[in-house]
Image (tube, rainbow, N blue to C red):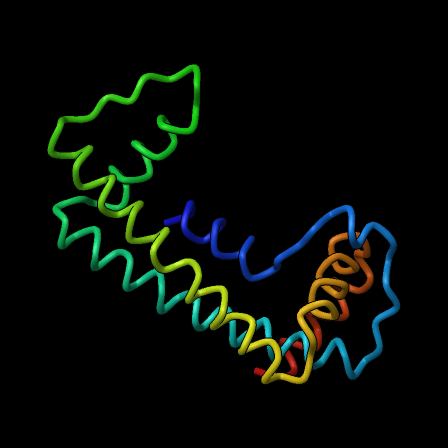
Length: 147
């Protein structure tokens, strides 16, 4: 499921490294909104992961096997060792993920906007967090207080 998590986290963050190379100033209010949005996105992400695991099982594939085929398929130096039935199931799961991505992106954007941030501001805060350990700590403390 790590592959899905990484894919969906990337979609959620919607980061464009070049667009946000400069560190943004982040107010306490914006950081609080980011924390709320981030937590809501994580809840949505967990629900999606559960849905995808259920779909994999329906297609007769275990998560670990899917991950192994996925890793091999993206590594040009590794041959994919899978039965025709496994490849059929794998392709169905990948197609389902691709089919779901536009709606997922729309849902994630709505969650972020519902928490009072524009997508651009969410991206800026995300980029600032990646560059600033102090801001990361501040976010972590804030999220712990909110729980």
